[in-house]
Length: 577
Image 1 (cartoon, helix red, strand yellow):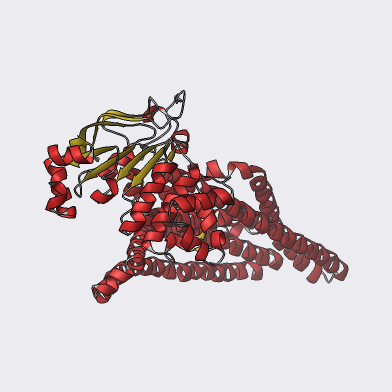
Image 2 (tube, rainbow, N blue to C red):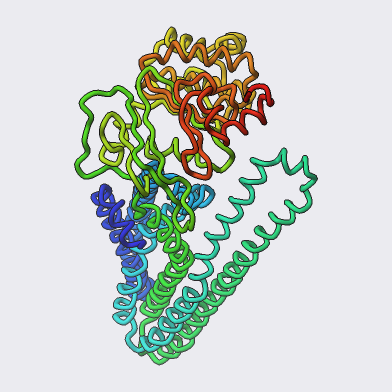
């Protein structure tokens, strides 16, 4: 997973990667050459008393050191830019994929998990890329080159390498095997903490109202402690790994000095060669230390890559057709033909055998008890879900055969939960129509009965709106959401119980204004209150997922018992008489 992800998202940076690899290879070769010069200074300069050779070779070493330092700075800078750029590309790809997912797909992943994948997981990939472009390039060149040059400087001491390097490599393999599964579980536990924390922040008022502060704190502590235990295990493994590697490194140095000193005393090895061999074995073991650092990052990067690929490979359950069709005219005509729908794994259908139509200039209302399928029915028209039986046609074309963006462009949807984005009143209204003028925005606000309170807000259209619209009331959020749909001026309006927070007088004025504003468009209203829909041209009554009756208010009072019960419960016995 990690290899495939990096192959795809480092491709635009291949020239930078090639340059970084070249620079790091040059830096490593320079570092490997320095001990050889140091040995020459000792053997041919210090021992022979050749001051000129010492100065000349020292100057060469100083020049190489300055060049290596400059190359290292440039390489690290380019590696940082490359890792940040590829991370930004991965984050953008995940975001684009999430926007394509249907509500069903979003439920499968969960919002907290998607947030973690697009932040923490991508950050792990970024960090791995940056370290890989530096450490992983340096480590193999330094280890292989160090072994070759160490044998060249002191072949008699080479058996020490055959012991130290395999021991350290075996230890690193054990560390990786021990921590990889834990890193995978850590990411899942971070998701859990995000879920709990998000629920508690969003529902803080409910928690306080029901005196659940203590139990909720315990729930968060449980999730936090679970993550802490796993993190402590991983950190303990690495806390043991670093001193173990250092112990191997130091014991190797002692062994080199012990056996090398005997060779020097026997005149079997020049002292300069012993110094160079010691430098090379330190560089070899240092390259293994770099591998340990990568071992810390690699398992977590692998786990993060798997989670990111799960999102990127997720095929949206609602997608554009291979050969989309376009209607000859956009009039807002909707036909539901024997529609049925059931959620995956559900034994009972939510909707079955639902048929009715919407026409321009008419208002159609859907009413029914809680759980009767009203919102699900409305969501089938803009294809937020796909029908499992029958078909939904908009302007004569099945919605499954139309391009999604082209379909959505013809619809003004006001969802049940009126959500506003952080910004201004104008920026929220222009979500539906980015080119709308201020006059058009004020007109939409007047129709939505929102112009009075917007005019009273500091800045008017430029008044600040907090995330979710938390700085305005529920009724004001609903009216601003309605104005947002009106600013779009679509051929089809879908209102999903978005009048529930309005008082009776405002509701009546809004319905009257909508009647005049949408006379050339089709309008579907899903509502709980009879007073909101009793003047609709056509009313569909849903009961347990099926159509219990259809007609005008007066007709349904006479012929539809479920509707009559709703009217009696809300308006009294006299209204249903």
